[in-house]
Image 1 (cartoon, rainbow, N blue to C red):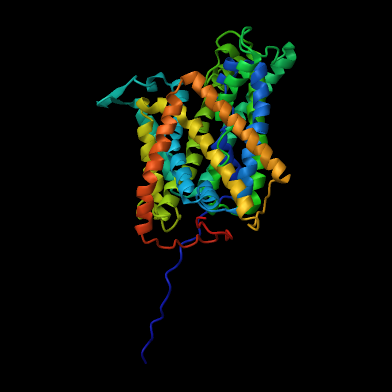
Image 2 (cartoon, rainbow, N blue to C red; image 1 turned 90 degrees about the vertical axis):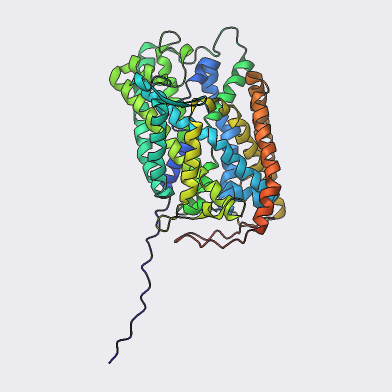
Length: 488
């Protein structure tokens, strides 16, 4: 008797880990803030009274409006590539392309900041890693020193983590959040005890100097604090890898707004116990000064703990934002603008390997000191992206009123009008303040990048029309979005 062979299907790889609620909060936390590390300059620029006021007010006029926009659009269109799909669906393919490409280009300089910030904290412990201290070789005007190779090592480690998927990035972010926040919690307790015990009024001085006007202090500080409160839309790019984006995203955004504001407020108020003058006084604060504050308030042990917390905050922000930004080449490739191989995913973890590794390689180049000054157009392009998202929200409210919106901004058109007015005013003020500080350089860089993207669109759009697009299979266990990414 002949045995008939049985055709056994190959075992399917396990579904990749998805981003759960708490890891989603941690991803938002590191996409926006990372803790109070880096906000010190706000106090030396605007004064303690104005700085505290800005930390409280800015979320109301900038963060909360943007988070509301992200909550509505992110739950209505919970797709991989987030805000690219929002703008494409609301405003059309041209504007969707601009949103995706410009925000990815913006990430070149933004992402390079975090490995450099890591080494700046490290050099406070090990002076040998300072930029230019140990130059290994040069290529033209580019200098490759020990500092850059440490930046490169950071990028490699967290690129490998990202290749495991956004779920593992989220899980690791929870651990990093504990490591970053614990030293600041200890610093807050010790500092507030000093304030109460010594009877010190932390906000006794409103502005940085007696001759500084309140309006000038507010304007200069607003530009700084906006940097520390932007990025609420970043996590939308991994919506396709979330456990339940329509349920979890609005809740995670609400928790994150409060967590980030408190995370800025408590350590900064407590650190004012060092007074105005001296090595740790607020008049001399700059990025990384909380380490010196911790040393003065509690000794070397807390100084080391805060420094290590700052190092972990820097790398955790890089890791979280790499998960977000690397999905932009992926969705642009899926729509035919970029080569198809950028959209290929690893079979086990469903991660766009080429997009992640390629983005990281670009970030490594931009870590070279020759490019760090380009960060001045970061806020310009970021705010351009925010305004495009608001425009997409309005367009979709008008053109697709039947679109399912699990979360809908309360208050109807009155609320949307207030959001538009507030964000326009803040973004316009930031642009003006940037012009006052750096002249036309930031605007020139920003407009040059936008002009290049506009000129590039017809060429890549023609390529996209010629390319035969292959449907991408849905991720295992993904929640149906209920909408398509088709342009309007």
